[in-house]
Structure formats: structure tokens, C-alpha cells
Image 1 (cartoon, rainbow, N blue to C red):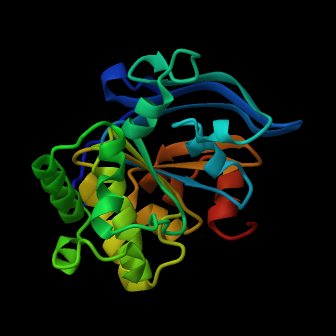
Image 2 (image 1 turned 180 degrees about the horizontal axis):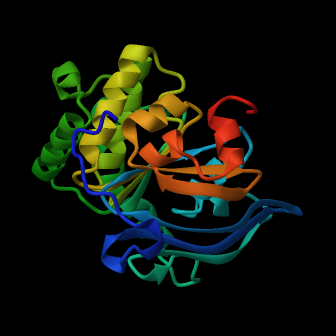
Image 3 (image 1 turned 30 degrees about the vertical axis):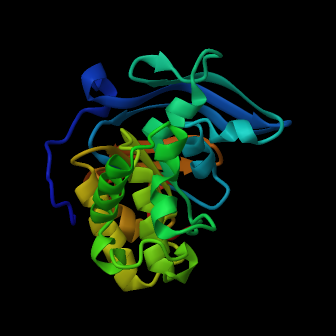
Length: 268
């Protein structure tokens, strides 16, 4: 494992509320008549990296999109079950979704910088939250770009369009945009699939350093990446959680034959 910040392994079945970032209980989700998630229950530990693996279309991205209610944007979405963060059910009608998405940030598969300057990209969410003092914005932008390992590369061109950056730089810019809001949880949906190996390594090291300050959940098709960066891994198949364990155990001694078949390439 590549983990730079090794921590003791936690018992996922008896994880205490203080160690739990997200508690999922009996989550079922449909898009129209199609059921995509089937009775998912899991506790995701704080300040660790949890990877979700499985075939394309198995429900991984839908599951993490349930953690900040991005699925609400899809017509015909409905769900049963609980997703709790800090002891509250985020699907409750009184949940402040804008505040939820500020505390549960998301980075998608392909970089999606806004058509504005590098600086404006990073402070976009801060301005939406009402931050307007220029000195505070400047400090926040610099810190977020430093956290995303991008500051030295862009500090002299902050007010140039973000689309001048390379693909890897754009992905780190998107990380900075999410980090500027200081999220408690960061969701990463295939964040390195479109990147070259060197930039992928850069992003992986960034992920590992981030778990000091937030909980990281990553969807990946790359099992080598999951084994390198994650503390815990969940294998999902056709909307069902098949196995969930610390990554060392799951990749070396899986309990379920279905998991073993997937990680050894017998299917998928």
C-alpha cells in the first residue's frame, strides 16, 4: 500500500458514530422503474480513503451521488432507506441541499472547469456562500491551489482563462475548487481515468494527503489504484454490496468467491 498516513484498521461492522463519516442503511434507489441500488448498508469511516470497485453500470457512481443528493437532478429518481451524515438523514425534506453539497464536495471523471479565470473558478463556491472580502478570497484561493499542488504552476496567471491549462492541471483545478469550501467529505468519481500515468500519480498522492483533513471516497475501475491508495474497498455488483473490508484483506483474501472472480479478472 502507498498510504503515507497509516492508521489502525477499524472494525467496519461496529464503527462508532464518532468514527463514522457516512452511515448507509438499507438504501434502495430507482431511476424510473429501473432499480439501481439494492439494499445497500455500510459505514464509511472518517479520515480514510474508501474505494468503490465493480463493473461499469453496477451502481458505484449512483451510490456516491447519493451522498450529496446529486441524483435528485435525475428525473424519476426515488429512494428508500437512510443516508446519515453527522447523525442526520440527508434525504429529509428539511435538509439544506446547498449546504450539504458544500460539505460533501465532488470531483468528476473529466475536468469541468467553468468558462472563467483560474481565480474565479476556485472562489466560485465561496462567492455563492456569500464570501466577498477580497483579502479573504485571495487567501482561500491560494490555500486551495496549494492544497491541490497547483499554486506554483499558476500563481502568475490566476486571471487567465482556466481552459489554457493542461488536462492534468484542469483536474487539479477542479480539486482546488472543491477544497476551497473545506469539505468534510470529498467524493471522487473516476478522477484519473482521463489522465496520463505521471499525472495520475500526482492525483493519487494528493488524495492520500487529503485524508488528514477530510474523508475521501473514490470510484475507480482501476483495482491497482484502489489497492494503492485506499484504506477500505467495497465491491459492488449489479447494485448490490457484495463485500466490504479493509483493502489489504479484500485484495489478498476476499471472503466471497464473486469478489475473488472479479479482482482476478475472471469476469468484469
